[in-house]
Length: 133
Image 1: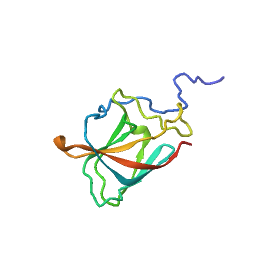
Image 2: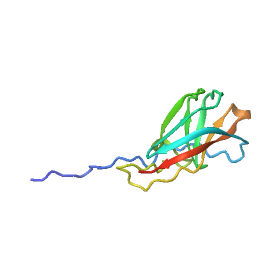
Image 3: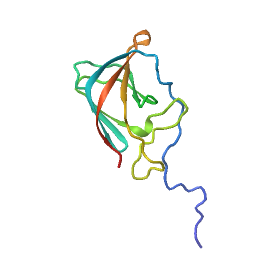
Image 4: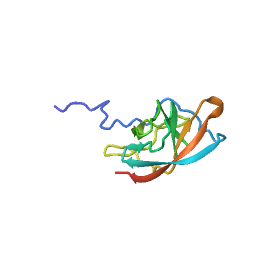
């Protein structure tokens, strides 16, 4: 007798999450820092090659998806799971990967939102590599 597969889910890609913030269109844009971003399938990796230590910040992808970070020290390398980036409606970034249920989205713009309430600013990073699979 064969067992029942009712309720069994082969893949567990999380498609939705708690809604994130709305992209801050009106926020001033600062300089583009020479921080090189590497997308390796479902991970985003970059090193803060500036002399600046950033406190609590938000990383934005494609003017839509965001993920808060505790900070980035000068010289620190950060690796982020693309599946944890979420938009204002709770949709997660289509990161791709071997078990992905959806085709991956490209990473075309990476920005860092820094500063305190009235002094927040968006800084751009440089995307060097965008490997999907």
